[in-house]
Length: 180
Figure 1 (tube, one colour):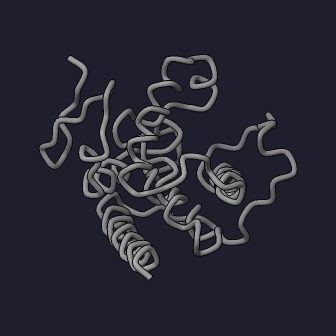
Figure 2 (figure 1 turned 135 degrees about the horizontal axis):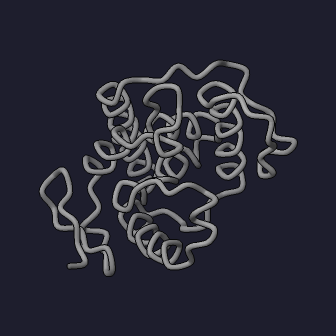
């Protein structure tokens, strides 16, 4: 079996995903229930909330791709960065799904540098605010400043509502720009 059943009742093919299989509702639902860092935060903190923070830090024309930059995780979960680095098969599957997501939302599959940078800024802030104190340095965060504000984790239902609303808003704005 190469497919999963999504929250909306869709059959999502993990090997041959298409844009038609991608649902904003499924993405919002799943990402709001997925906890960052494999759940090793002080309290539940969702991938949806993480994505909303990343989206806040980029220019308007990149807000949609920033909001969706981790949308593959709605279909294959959130794998920790160190494990993902040693699993090339996972990265290939993630890339295939990312292309289907980009087709669905009419996005360039190459993340803009501002999204990559915003993701790191949020990551260093998450480490500061949500993770246990530990002296080891995370090389990827060297020289990256955290956000000035403290992250206050949202409940899964609250993150779902905010993420889904923001996604619909950005999709509508993107559609208006495409028609202009």
